[in-house]
Image (tube, rainbow, N blue to C red; front, side, top):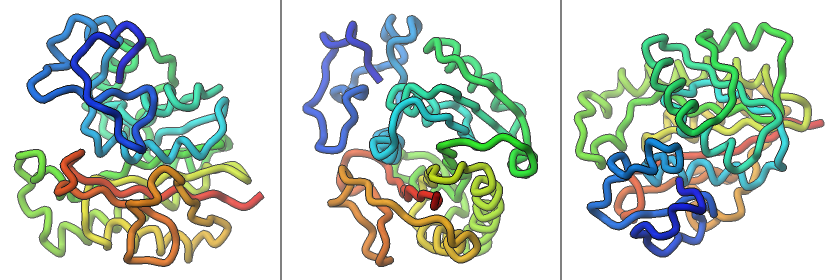
Length: 251
């Protein structure tokens, strides 16, 4: 993610859906080794994360945002750049991931309330938000496309375990969305059980939510369902893989 001071760096032509706050760098350029990384001008992301964040282009600026599964902070950073939120809350259930989240936000000079709470605590509280982001823990099948180990990621019981966890998180997230607000659901895996099927479960349990079109992602709409959600596959050569669905709650 570049600032104006990074325009001289070796970039590639932007993709049709690429946000203006994001740059693609040529192969071999190490973002983490550039001095401007430490200055908070750069943050490195797989393009799959950027793809999912295109959902934010359908949301007005100045909203209140809860990033429910936040560490290490990529989606919160993208939301802050896209939406300039009036409130940004970053929650992470796994305590040992909090230092990385805090470090990334501090380095980029992003002010956020950081918490280490189970999603059910948020669901039972009085706070509600215009946008709740669920970048859900998943089987991580796209890790294979990144050349990383993802042992058992296609095993049925692993997929089922993740889908059940995602549904619990989504049910909590739905309780935190204001009337007229949005819920952005994202994964980095491929199976429909953790993607379309999980959203379908949410729609049945919370019929006040409706999937929304993401205009810039029209060409990547999933063909597995008749409502809008979107997929990026690694064979396209612009990311390891992602799924995103943006939902809105009725007024």
